[in-house]
Length: 176
Image 1: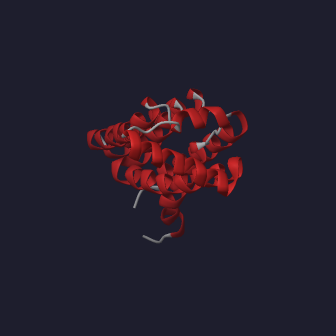
Image 2: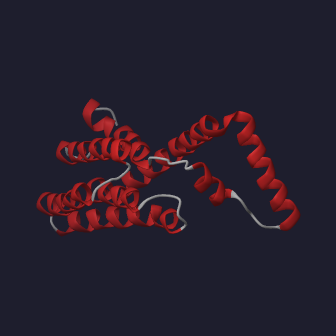
């Protein structure tokens, strides 16, 4: 079980990140970078070099899990840095669990936004057009253009926060 300090730090980080992401569409470096440092230093103080290695492993995994999505234009850099900061605080095993939960919630969130943006019929029409193009030409077309055209903006800070809270909740309730 993770000490409550690290659990509390992770929860405070993601709550502030979700609020800033929803309000201003940005997760600022002034929030993520100090928390990364607190993760490294806190684990170093608590567990020595092994703690620093654990924190670095969580940071690297958090960064790598979302870096490809960022490179493809699917999310902003703040989301990537947020998961890296969370990883530096809660370690690689826990950050991977956060990633899995955030991925599932993010998919549901994206589906909900798509339905809200173009209605259920419009969403199915868009998916049908993409599949038809894929079958006939072997290429996927229209996905990024559709997202840019509709100005659909997903706030992944929210789903990262929900995933982190779900993973950290057992530390507060005593359940494992």
